Image (cartoon, rainbow, N blue to C red; front, side, top):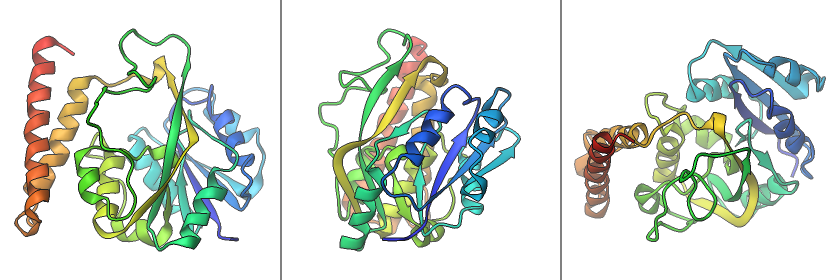
Length: 272
């Protein structure tokens, strides 16, 4: 397979980590890639670290005033020339065969998006209680939806199980779905829902990406997370096409909207 893969890498004050992220792309067994770094207003050494690679047209550096990760990813996408887009946050890493294994699935099946499992690793001291039992950021949930393939929209409505740094998506699918929407705190989740509504998904149950957990990354509270999810489910609940949805889908949307209202209220009371 000789298709070009555009690696979309948003960055904000990532000078400490972005070099490792770029190296993990350059170390891929699948080599037909371009890297597009969208710097979202960094004030540290991010620009200098990227420039030191001196890869010519294979590595593009774009700069914008700080507008958030959704706008940075959309900027990179506008300059991308690939047949596939792969997303890698500037503090995360890929294992060497990630792209090779995922692109094979696009050859084997007609799917719009392929993702994988990932492993978490801790960089420095993390506040107590911030990691779950798996060593990752987020809540413990014994009833969490497992990874799914095929028509996974309703499963995805229950919970976002697609880590962004594992995703590869066909260019035509992303163009059809539209850009990341910055009004949502979980802008990646909202985009995956749009894609899964129309296209089948596939996944590789291997840890092909490494999610770095570090103190600088912890910029949001639970209250903000739940407020963002409330906005997302509210947008689905009051969408003009809501009444056309299947009963099970409508019930999931309403349930998750109410559940996150309760979680947001609770965290406001206890001050999380």
